[in-house]
Amino acid sequence: MTTTTQTTINPAAELLLDDPDELRARRRFSWSRRPQKPAAATKIRTSPVAATIKWILLGAGALVMLVPFYIMVISAFKPQEEIIRHPLAISPSTFTLEYLGDAITSEKFNVIGAYGITLLFVALVNVFGIVLSAPVAYVIARGRSKWHLGLLLLFVSGLFIPGQVTLIPVVFILRLLGLINTIPGFILFETAATLPVTIFLFAAYLRTVPRDIDEAAALDGAGRIRAFWSCIFPIMKPVVATIVVLNSISVWNDFVSPQIILGPSSGIYTVTTGVYAAVGEFSTDYTTVFPTLLLAIAPAVVFFIIMQRHIIGGLVAGATKG
Amino acid sequence: MADTVTRAPGLLRAPIERRDRALRTWRNRLPGIIMGGPAVLVFIAMFIIPMILAFVLSLTDWNGYSLNFTFIGLENYADAFRNPRTVDAAIFTAVVAFFGTILCNGVGLATAALISGPGRANTVMRTVFFYPYIISSLIIGFIWSAMLAPTGVVNSLLAQVGIPAMPWLTDVTFAKASIILTIVWSHFGFNMILYLAGIKSVPVEYYEAATVDGATRWQQFRNVTLPLIAPVVTVNLVLTLVGLLKVYDVVLALTNGGPAGSTQTIVFQILSDSFANADLGFGAAQSVVLLIVTAVLGLGVTLARRGSEKKVTD
Picture 1 (cartoon, rainbow over the protein chains, first blue to last red):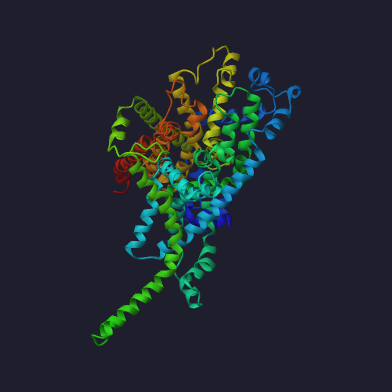
Picture 2 (picture 1 turned 135 degrees about the vertical axis):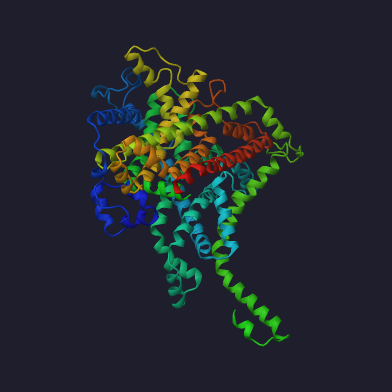
């Protein structure tokens, strides 16, 4: 599955995700637009000076990227005094798990609860988003009339509407429906927010799925709905994976919608709204700030490390097709 | 359908046939309606109606709670252009969007060009430059606000090399620069990834030809890579610009709009007017303006880039 994931969606994306050996092996059966020659042979010889300058620049850039992360991690295990005095130092004598423990058991921010709630939201939005989008994308991809094109354009127009513009009236609508400050209300809004990208990518993918499959299913007596779910949907795995990656990241990181739709009165905190409540404004108590932030980003970083290839491939596919 | 033409025309048969046909098309369409209906309903409820509502509300003085409100025409829009708070926020948002877009894309393209080669080191660099993108921008803001605070890590590091503390987040100019740099730090990796995908899709033959012609690496980049990835440049510019016009989370965490409200963005205004200030009509008017500006700029950049994309294919 890994292999088919991005090669079908975006060969260019796949290219940059792998080391060359694996790629060469993969190219054998996927696609072979590029010659099998190692890229190095075609490059002009770079002077050693240029190479040195390049790697000094990249090294400096890498430091700028990594030092904040390093400081955040080590500061989660240090007392305030140490964080301010020796921000870069790791010393075993001041190492403590006390503050991390405090952050885990903090009353302001129930980390474990927030993980659970946010994961639940991610899962529900993914399921509902896909179940809603896949059939409509299929209808659009198979339709030939101007209505189907119109439908696609309608959904795609949603890509250009900033969430903040619709959020205020959405609050009003959810209040009317009695769904404000409730999980169903939030899920409804987040699911709707995923529809444009999901339908667009699904429809683009389904256009590449041959109609023979539909016809075969019809010959076997399956209705259109049955044919879709049991014959077409299983083929959509690669694009579904892309969508799951895109939607999971956006739901996990969303702050404004949970903050407003699930206001403080609901008592429901996601990781982001929980961090906001715990760290707040102008907090200078670093023994709270750093452990809380570390806890908040840990799952995302772990997820990124494990799924890096899919995440990057998914983002590229989402951006270049959308 | 074709056989209807050959069939003998009968006055009596026509209505029955029409009914049959209607029934048949209905039966053919039903699965499509069942499959598409729910998504269309959700989309209408959460996108279309809110859009219309935002526009209608922007013409009223509704406070969001009371039952009586009046239509005040375009008064809210006039206010938006008169209100110094909104104007300042719009200017700051424009500054962030402009410099943010240029820097994210400049740095992103440069790093992509430097690490486009094969090899482990390049892969590692790609991960290092990209990772902040998957962290929520609110948390990015909090990380940097802790780093840049008056007693924060950056100032204490500066003190160790004998440089006096800088007012990173407490001085108006410094705070604005800090916000833009934080955005670039966390976002350019995404642009870099897209540029890398573009660069890697340029056929190797073109570089071979350029090498034969004696082109330097810079000339190859300037005359082969850059024109061929023009569509990627457009996507990058539009995505970054449109994204930065609604920047909020990172500013909230980094400066909370301060010092003295100097770093409030337009979304700050929309949210505070709509909820805290109970001036929903005014908030809605500002969000409609934001929507129009976003659409115009997004389309404008796309159309403006059309020219430089065309040159390549000709």
